[in-house]
Image: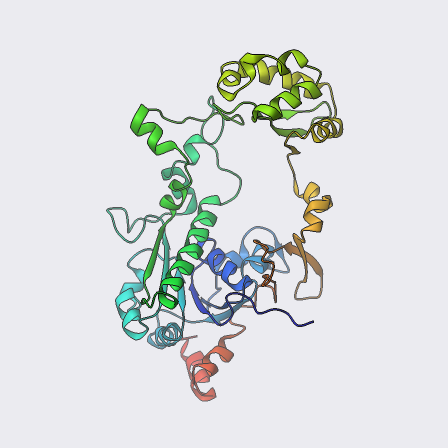
Amino acid sequence: MTNPQKPLAGLKVVELGTLIAGPFCTRIMGEFGAEVIKVEAPDGGDPLRKWRKLYEGTSLWWYVQARNKKSVTANLKHPDGREFVRRLIAEADILVENFRPGVLEKLGLGWEELKAANPGLVMVRLSGFGQSGPYKEQPGFGAVGESMGGLRYITGFADRPPVRTGISIGDSIAALWGAIGALMALRHREVNGGVGQVVDVALYEAVFAMMESLVPEFDVFGFVRERTGNIMPGITPSNTHTTRDGKHVTIGANGDAIFRRFMLAIGRPDLADDLGLADNAGRDTRRDEIYALIDDWCRRHDEAEVLAVLEQAEVPASRVYSAVDMFADPQFIARQMFAAAQLPDGKAFKMPGIVPKLSETPGTTEWIGPRLGEHTDAVLTALGYPAEEIAALRQAGAI
């Protein structure tokens, strides 16, 4: 059986990015068929190659983040290196970059120059604060975007300082907006007969866009959302509780019918029939009482029993998963969320599966993150560079 064509097959994407936001954006495109050519500095490449846990000197994260990509090296400080990149972008559908605003312009690779050579180009620009405004030239990593965008302020417990979510969520959210924006721009170009355009994604705005009702609540009522730990004020009960065996279970029983089933399941028919608890507004006024009794019930039962009771009662609940739980879970396995792959020395390892699931044109992992510059000669040759010129570029330090 032949593999179906992937939805982004035929698209050429050039990545001028490092670490998380830009490379995650192009990773998504590569998983669904785009040809992604990642441009790296010859002297070490993307710092992500050396981040977190290393296997034989290379980050395991790198092998995931750069899967399905081709790596070429180009020294952007060298005129011939810049010319190589300019020619590469001239044939591309999408350019994704996450330099600080103004950097590419100083290199002669700004939007106006690139658009003149390739009017259909879609340029995704991911930066801390966007391409305009008084902060545009300031450095801004994901942590800054999460803080300025409002996420850090509301994350954690009221009696403690704000905390991070545990992953670089700001970068990843910005990457998703970049991919969505690129596809919208392509739709405009290919279906509406439009030209290329810039997709300007600021990390703080990417986070800010996820902040639910924060803006109208403050504007209309002057209400400032604060840290509330694991509960959701106004939506009760929804919380994380500790079981007798020291495990943590998240329970979301805030639907009216669900709450009634929950109370019956834990032996509290009096609360199930209490008209004052029949809706969220009533339950929220008595949330301390409700959470106390749920805490007490969970403390008297082991995790397995808690989850079994809640499953039988059709109450949404889950253990708080670690990697150990994920690897053993039948839902993860059934949904193919662990893709089998091999490291360069042949060692088998698991990579995260592809999201989302497309029924007709699913994404795949064709290869893991490449060696630095692994595809430089092939890409240069495809652009029309003869072998002797490639050798000269390497000798001059341009690639």
